[in-house]
Amino acid sequence: MPELRTDPITGRQVIIAPERAERPFEHGAPQPAETLDRCPFCAGNEDATPEAVLTVRDEDDPARWRVRIVPNRYPAVSASPEDPRPDSNAGLFHTRPVAGRHEVVIESPDHECRMHQLPLKQFKLVVKAWRDRLRAIRDEGQATHVTLFKNEGAGAGASLEHVHSQILATPFVPPVVEEELAAGARFLDEHGCNAWLEMIDRELEVGSRIIGQSDALVTFCPFASRFPAEMWIVPRRECPDFDSATDDELGILATALKDALERLDRSFPNAACNVVVHTAPFHDDDRKSAMQWHIQITPRMTGIAGYEIGAGAWVNIVAPEDAAVRLRTS
Image (cartoon, rainbow, N blue to C red; front, side, top):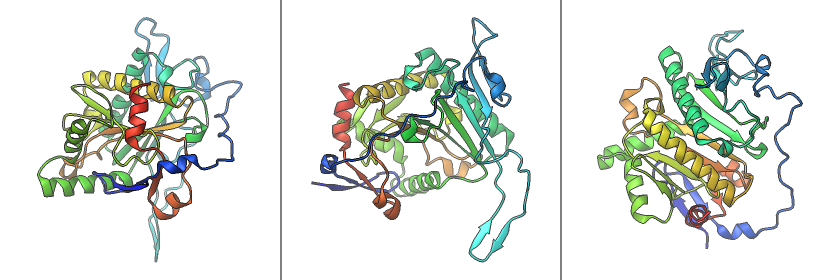
């Protein structure tokens, strides 16, 4: 029987309806991400991208790079808008220029298509590059918030198959993060403790949704999962900012993230997915104490349809407890 669940952090409601997995599905799988004759992200094709803002060199061969971060050729925001128009407030329709940074993290010089295929050593270089670039953007003092995300597979929005992620720095805090900040603050006021750490404690007590754990991190299928096999990775110490993660924590994170993506691929081969790093806004110490940086892995095996778009609520056809069993045993 379908059941309504409420996310313990945001209050978002999700309907868990396993029976819908049995419905007929007529359309085929999404087409793969585009394969180009000359991949702009492969080693040797550096002239096909803008100049790198961060390059991680090979320790044994400094002439060879391991990770490159470059400006996105098709940015959602611009570092310096060519037409800086003033704010406009015409009744209900308010506009203002939006400046920021939109960058691509090329996660390997080799033409790998899935992040879980990268060696663990390369994984560690990637997550450290994520952290280091966020620190650099923070120190510039122009951005309010950074979202770090990857679209893996055409069904998750990837346009190129070479393994990569993206950094989007904006002068505003995205609504989802605002929602998490507000919900965390309410919980802190009512209960006197951090909602994220309380949630982790309860998940560990229940155990049925846990995928993996260490002294530093917990990987689990959240209670009100929106997508089949959705996973979150959350630190066990209070830590609102991803850019404050230590090198040791990043090494543990790389291991946990690689493990989660490998389990996802074994359980649901070639499933498209989005990976998003949620982190607190920069320079907002008054609010960030109720936040916890975390990673959300959202497989895209089912589409977002009319109810999700029209009602702003979710229907998930796989109970997170069932997904966790499959992921743990894969």
